[in-house]
Length: 402
Image (cartoon, rainbow, N blue to C red):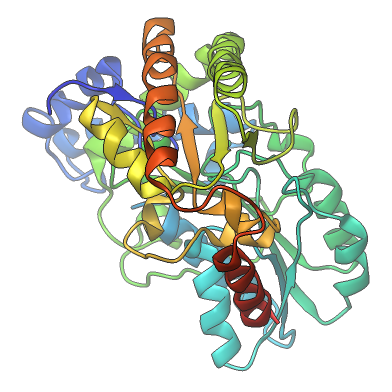
């Protein structure tokens, strides 16, 4: 498949042609080490410096606050370990039940190492109740870590309010903004955020490059130890072509933020079209407090994997959740935490658009989806919420969660 209708942009994005153009010279012609003293390497170092400035401008940060990494997962791991190293006598972490595995599984690992972790719940629309954070945080809390926006539902969290609460208790505040950067405006100059994660391949840069924002004055401890790269905060020779690509992508993202309403318009067209033409269908997540590109739709009584298979036959790419957990047969931990009924949970599909998505593509999805859902429901033995199998699954889910 060389061409498709690609609506899985929360998993990864197409590399922008302008990004590719910016990267190419650093793959072939300007291959010097950016840390070298000679001019050949020095010019590469200057290009890395410019890319750092481009990323900083997108975030409203200072150039010195940007650390280049290999990906969002590395940035998250680095941030969490740096926060704990900065306050080693504190052994309490607060996060949420709906985090990406790059945060959630790190926290579970730290529990085995003796840390206490509080997992904040979300409501039926995927939103946090900050009174739960206020009740959980203490003077012994080292870190509050949460996402800016959820990768499956697009629901945006009140990160500034959460950060203000963290500051009251001198807890480090880390935000996984992998899904938010380039989709919503971010200005860290006046923010309560200490550490912020981003990933290149979620904003039309290549895979294999990311960044971590570390607020000036934060007592940062490196996760990767070795050479002096990134001012001693992340060892290892920089992935120069990737860094250049990320810088260019950040520049383009800042420009395209002004046109984000086009993505929202197409998302709403898709969403409303599905709700209007397919019965027993609903949106998972808050109706307005969401990323402009993300729609998570639940189709009752059918399996999401079957929907994806039939969409794939039509050359349409979507997903049933996070790409980082797609190898698992378990239903989405995000939708389970939201309390989505099994009638909807297993038939939920995430459509995530980008600035390259066209109206014609959305219209094509609206043409094929009703037939796909009707065919699958005709084959399904389950057509009511009272089905015995659903009640059994609900009971089992509640038991597992408790």
